[in-house]
Each structure stands twice: as structure tokens, then as C-alpha cells.
Image 1 (cartoon, rainbow, N blue to C red):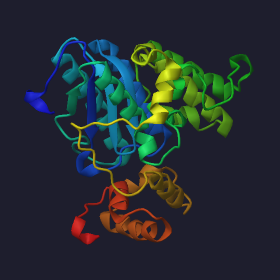
Image 2 (image 1 turned 90 degrees about the vertical axis):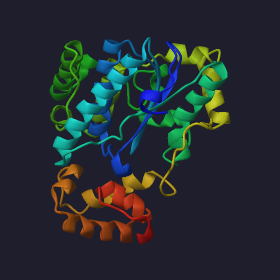
Image 3 (image 1 turned 180 degrees about the vertical axis):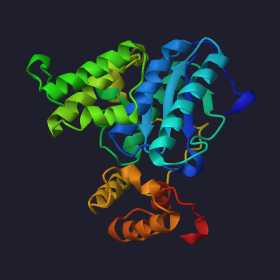
Image 4 (image 1 turned 135 degrees about the vertical axis):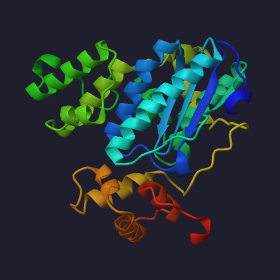
Length: 311
């Protein structure tokens, strides 16, 4: 439900979802995901938002949150989407709105509806064939419920390289100052690190900024293990959300990035958006030949207008 007719109950979980204009992609690499996450987490407490679930998919966002007042939920959403859109447009050399407005939200009154919603949100990447198990997807943050480094080796700060220690200090300083990590700051932090250090830094940033209420979510299932078991056994359902997926798998978006970066033409995947539309159409042809993505997925990836009759 959207806008002024939005149903809302104080302290009741709301399934909030945001789609992008034309279904275009918004998350291309780790910097995109982390920038959004730090923006989201810095602002949630400022508006009294209690976040139970968050899932960043390549082209849309889900979160399960509660608030005291409807206007707090709306203000929070407006602020973090506006900030991310501004940063996204700078990086992608674009202008205008990024997200559809107003955002969608549906209250989940009662434990059964809340559980179904949590399962649905966590399993979104499973449904889209990005992972086999929900906790294997980094950007629904489920794996961080009981581990600070689920995707990397334990970090021994005293033994870390100078570049790593500097990056950790920046993460601490910016978080303590209530500042999100911008794309270019993240790029500066990550650039001198090796692969293993980069994985450690991602986990560290997530753990430092994370505001998800894992205990609160687990209580709906009588414990974390029961919650994970429920997530594995069913996919959840959202009868009040008409979520339309494009193509067979969202994994093709990662494949497209690999293909384009493999050409050697780009230092950053976002450089594709500095190209003229005609040049991006040439990339469209390359991706159509070298991947199994649908034409619509390729168009969404390249931010190219697409008409269904072109299929």
C-alpha cells in the first residue's frame, strides 16, 4: 500500500519495499551495497525505527521494520532513499529519481504474518537463484545474526597490515560520527587491500554499522535456530505484494559485470553510464551474445529503455 492511504499500526511490523524507476539496477558492486547499508543504519535510530529484516536485491529493497508513528517511517524512508539516490547519481553520471515514489508498505499484524514476512524477505535471494540458502546471501544480513565475520577469516587487528588498520580506523571514526561511508570513501579504503582483507573489511563494516534486531526477529520463532529452519523449509508468501521478477535468475547480473570488466575497458563498472546511449547499445549486443540473461535484464542492467514488444 502506498501514500496517504497507507495502513499503519504503532509498533507493528511493516513490510516496506522499494522498486526502482523502470526496474533499473541500483547495486552493482560491494561499494553500492555497503554505501546503502551504512546510510540505512545511520538513520534508522534517528527516527526510532526498529529494523528486523533488510534485504538488498540488485534492483529493489525489502525491509521489515516498526515505528511509533507513520510519519517517522515515511521520513526515515524519504531520507535514506534521497541520500542514496544522490550518491548513486553521482557515481552513475545520472540525474533524477532513482526509486519509485511513494514507497510500498504493508502492516503485518500478528505473529503468523510477521513470520511469513521474515521468511519471504530472507528467501528473496534464494527465489532469485543467487544462493541456495538464505544465510549464504551477504546482503540480507542473516548470517551476521550470531557471527561478526561469516564471510571471512577472523580479524586480528594488531596483526593487520597498515592499509587494513587505516581502513578499520576510518570505519570506526565515521560510524562514531554518525556518518555513512560514501562510494569514493569505500573505494579508497578497499583499493590497497588484498582479496582476503577486503572480505574481512566488508564483514567489519557490516558488524560495526549493523542495527538489525536479530533477537527480536528470532523471538517470533522461539529462537534463531527455529527461524533458520523455518526459512529453509518454506519460502514465505506475500499476498499483498505483487513482486514481478525479470528473467530466470538474478545471478546473470553478476555475470554481466564479469563480462564487461573482463573487456578491460572499464576501471569501475559504473563507468558504463558515462557512455552515450549508442555505446551502451553496443554493450547490450555483447551481453546478449555472451550471457543467458533476458533482453529485459540486460536493459535494466545498462539503464536502457525497454519495450516488451522488443523481446
